[in-house]
Image (cartoon, rainbow, N blue to C red; front, side):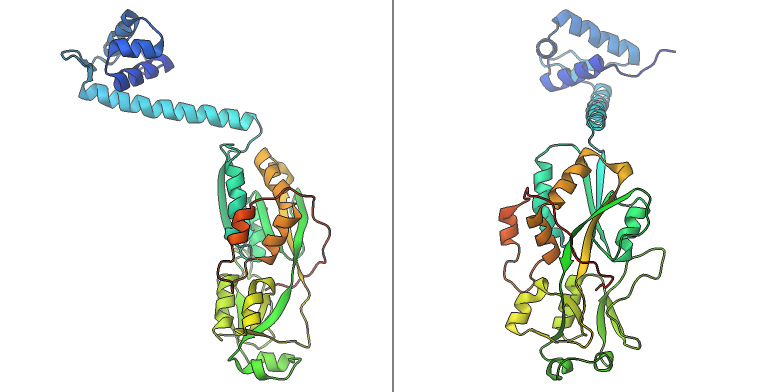
Length: 337
């Protein structure tokens, strides 16, 4: 039984006739004689046992059956083009897609200039950027839901083929709203004084464990929120207390909307990591690692967005991705938000 699969030449013939509406113009486009194109068109009708072309008018028209075949041919040509591009893309070392998972403390806005620079490479790699929280970030890499993680905290766990470097350190400040009862309490705050007031925490997104809970004293009630931005808003509104990234609330502290309080138990800076697995090192991943090793970009990502400024992203939008040497070492900390 003869196959009705269209050849590449037949796909091109249908597309040329549909777009030009003329056998002669289709022949010019295809670089063939008119008689050759006419013969090929009749052979196509014979193969499908259907009238595909209406030759009764000056302009060659597709019959309804011909239109269906032409539409399907156009779709097949596009699929073939995409398939060819993907094969060449993979053969040249580019991944089909790159899944980046950031810890939610890394604001997506700060990655946008880097994404623009990556788009300019025209690599064909599809990017997927999602976020997790605390243990959930490392878990995503371990479980294959991430090719690259950015901003993970706590010590790197045991993951086969794990590679990592330090992005930087996050400095913390214990902050309360100006109208919160703790704002007027004499410093340094003791654990029992803090315990009397609700803590605001960012909920761990781990799927396999109970997750980590930090910044909560035994017996203290807590309000769990989805992101650090939500935590800042909640503490600014007096809904609770807790540790916040110093750079992200610098303007709120300066204006007095948040009040910094020293505590008997100060919090050490938290190390932020970039990590990946050695079995997934394509060109796109290597490009991203090169960007993330640049000190200026790393510093912006770790410091985050100052949520108290009018236009916190203006400088970052202009600056874009930088190209500078790798980061040095930073102090480790098991603390979290």
